Length: 112
Image (tube, rainbow, N blue to C red; front, top):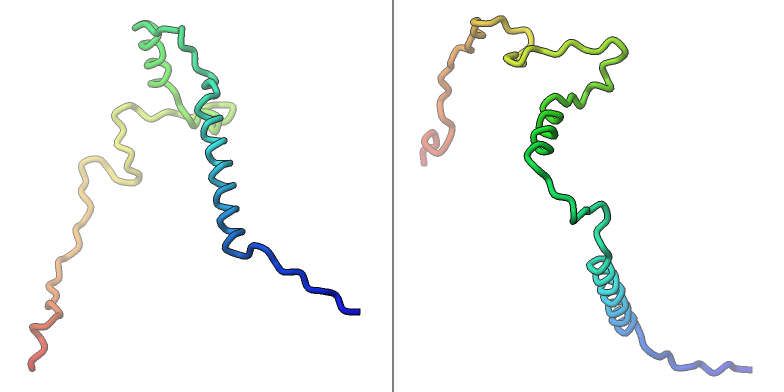
C-alpha cells in the first residue's frame, strides 16, 4: 500500500511573516500595558519644602558609602582638604623623565 503524499501548505516565508506579526502584536500589547499601569512608589500629593531639602542635602553630604566596610571600630576619615595622593610628600615634585629626541619615521626617509 502506498500512502498518498499530502501537499504542504504554507512554507518558510509564511511562517516568518506570521511570527513577525504575532511578535509585533505581543510587543504592542506589552507596551500598552506598561503605559497604562500606574507608576509605583510615586506620591503625587506630597510636596517638599526647603527644610526637607536642606535635611536631605545634609544627610547626603555626611553619607559614607563605605561605612559598612569599616568594621566595628570604624575607619578614620581623611581631613576635608586631603589630596588623595598616596606616597608623595607635600611640596615635592616627582623627577621628570629625560626627554629623548626620536627621528620621525615616514616617507621622508624613503628615496625613490
